[in-house]
Amino acid sequence: MSEDGLAAREVKISWSMLRVHEECTEKAYLRSRGMKSPVTDIRPYFRGTVVDRCMRDWLCAEDQEPGGMAAMVDEVLDREEESARESGDGVVRWKSPADRDESRAWCRELVTRLEPILRRCVLPFDYEPALRFSVPLRVPYLDDSPQRVWLRGEMDLLVRDSQARHAVWDLKATENTDYWRKCVGQLVFYDIVVRVMTGAHPVGCGLIQPMCPEQMLPFVFTQQQRSEVVQRILGYCRSVWRGEHRPKEGTAGCSFCEVRHACPRYAGQGRGRVAWPVSAA
Image (cartoon, rainbow, N blue to C red; front, side, top):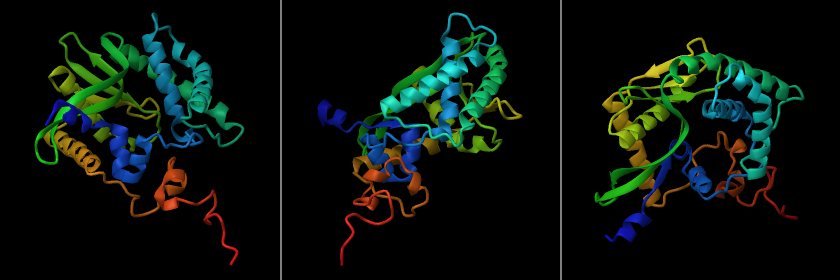
């Protein structure tokens, strides 16, 4: 096949899109075409956005002043709320009049706990916060011929020590001590990306979760875990190449789906449960 033909069937895969695809192929398809509603409620993960931005800005500053992240929270929260609304990424639907101020206080507490962790485990080394990546991976196409695809995304923190060994840290804004169970696949994805980028797997991947009793949670992955994630990546690619997309079997979560308005399951329906127009018969 020509170079143009090979390029035309390249697939771009992020961890978030892979996860959505496994939840509902139609949702992933519509999201990949920019069909996300601009009024999607982003409140469930907005605190995470705020503390991520505070950490990035603090680490990128010339001087990491004590208490600097906590001092950023008010400005960053206002900025990110406005930015999401203006960009069409979504809107923050606060739960109550007090919810906004409670979120500010919660974020300040998290970054206050985060600062000593970063001073101990990040600042002494070379580091890259909010590292955006797009790296090639060779996988078999439907006919088993070699095909290049792209792993894309953003890591919260890539740290490199004096021996050029890498570690990946992902900041999580959670108090749920079991939340890590949802994150293992994401960290394995990053482990594979670092291997492609540097030629070696990172010496560690882990979570920074300042609001949990175990504030740093490192993992070491096996080849079996890596192979399983590669198979998930390959499954995503094959589904895209075959043009497979349809609504999932059940409807759990559909009421809150950000692409519900464009989903064929709900085509022709308004905001209520009855299709419009209503028959006069």
